Image (cartoon, rainbow, N blue to C red; front, side):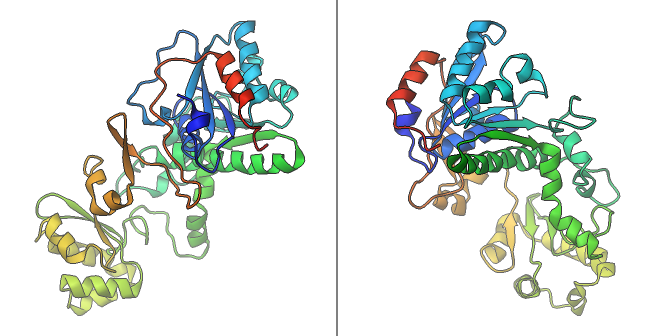
Length: 373
């Protein structure tokens, strides 16, 4: 397939070279591809093809190169010379040792945006240490704030470090640098560290702490499950609800629809009353099934939604109506996000079944219209 020909999103014409990694790098490359970029993944010679079930590998071609020999490095540099963006997720120094670091890449392509995705960043005492999402968010204050009161911290999957603090910041940084390069003609390095991004995501909570509205005890605050009006509840059938009417008028809607007439429920703004109110709401929500409560509360200003499993989510009427999930190669997966009114994104195809020769990639890029950068 020809990504450049099929692309129609706002990044159509943007050429990206992705050095294969795991986690946030592939997810960032998937987002760029979904938005129309022509992403070419550099894999090791002799490596197995991408798993057709790997959603984050969708929508790009691959090339197979032995980066331990001169010919492989030369092929990679040829791609870099014709690209707008490079993405890599190795430990600091790895690309330099391969002869593909920023100095070598920018010497071949002065306008290149060189995106680097790591956990700890390119410098600092931990820069060369191994780590994973759980470690990167641990030092930012994020992990300590997540989990039930009196219990240990709970890893929020790997959404906060890898994807929220990592991939999304990499995409934002790369696109900002591409815009700047269009005016200056000069590329630069984007150092996207998951610990930096996760710390940035904590801005609101640091604000609340500075205002004296956040205490450093899990399950004791407005947004960490401590408030009876912003937490989860089990229903009679074992299903769960997410209940979040923070604003007084939305809380009043919940009380009216759920039949909460006791004056005690008017004390919602007193944290001392939260444990007692939570206990009473736990008992109430166990009186009906999840479906029964949804019939009463979902779609109203009570701010209540069913907590669905990954298997249930694609069938939810709202997500189904919006096409939030799609099928590629017979596999249900998230559709591209965000949405664009004039240049809609689209999945450019399933993971590549086989590598494409570098010469074919370069020939196609030469035939295509010049990239925007």
